[in-house]
Image 1 (cartoon, rainbow, N blue to C red):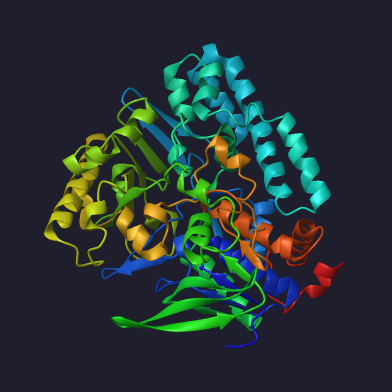
Image 2: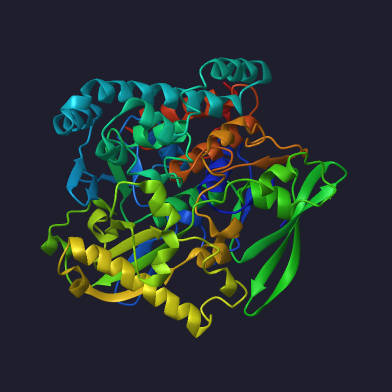
Length: 541
């Protein structure tokens, strides 16, 4: 196993992206270590007898129209082997007790639909879309500063400080200062679970990132999210790298102030074996908290360790996976997402999230993987709702898939509450269900190692943007951070974290080298980017 140029801890979107880019542009041999028995992190899928298949994390992606930079980067990382299909033009439907709103594709159409419904707020709606762009630009500069040469990074941060007031308001503060209608404020915040914090806690910059992300519509990978991991893995292996599953990294090996490798536990049946791997570069896709609090030795010089423990808890959910006996289009579903809310107060909804365990759901996200994936062989649905880690923490030390009857009983109550909520809005839905199973924050913790089973990285609060250590560079020589905590939340955000990490490794103007390589490859191949061996010459230009 000798001779690797880098070790990546975790095979999530950020780790795969950083590894694939370095493989393509520098010919690096990268070893990726994954604790799960499947590679891909939140991009992997799982199946059950009956032909049912579900994604565990990716439900839709914006910014994937041909020619968009996000699409070019995704294609570069996956060698153009992933086919992206557009979702319906009304890809999101927001459902409230006394009104519904179907989000149309395109900024102009979205803006016009809002003004038709809320004509008295037309000026504020127009301003909202301008503010989204401004806050999104703030985020882009913030991200670029993390991997830019030091003088450029300092200039970008200085420029951002002058324009930070609006982006670093909470989403709730922004909405309250711009709008009067409570229904409109609730509607505009409907996608808050896409970034994991309700309006009172999330930064408007975080909200703007997600809101602008979907303005040109939503996309879904044909064959499911697992095709992303498979394609990126092929790029890594073609350069001589490897991906090893069932390898849980326990600690980062140090030589003085340098990271020189990792110690991992290789799972073998019910037992395991300790194995050591060495490389001149170590890249962690395990998240900032796990990297700095669990994997590095206590004597490593990490001055901000205490800040990690005081951070707001990450977003945690219960997911009900459903195998359907009939086509859900019978009930009028066409592949769009349904955000169902029992009230207008999103902050109150999160505050009452644990009432799921009492059989009461205040809101949920309903999605149909089979309707988004034309290669699906059986119909499926997913219902997702917030649920705190603390609500089930008493069962944390029980073995996965063999937890106590009390835990199973609570899972049954969760399933009943979520099905009842959907049934109230779509009578007959429950009769479509043939199979069901539930994941909880304990499931996520078991497979990912994320702190308290959170599904995103460091929470997108205003304070996040003041943490300069949430960046690819770390205080430890030869150790780099990647994924959501080096970029932003979600699949695209994690990918951009991988891009930022690779940009830092490529040296000055690394980001522009990656963009240039992805754009040239797309131009050469009509938008697709097949692997043609090491592309170090592109990176050196």
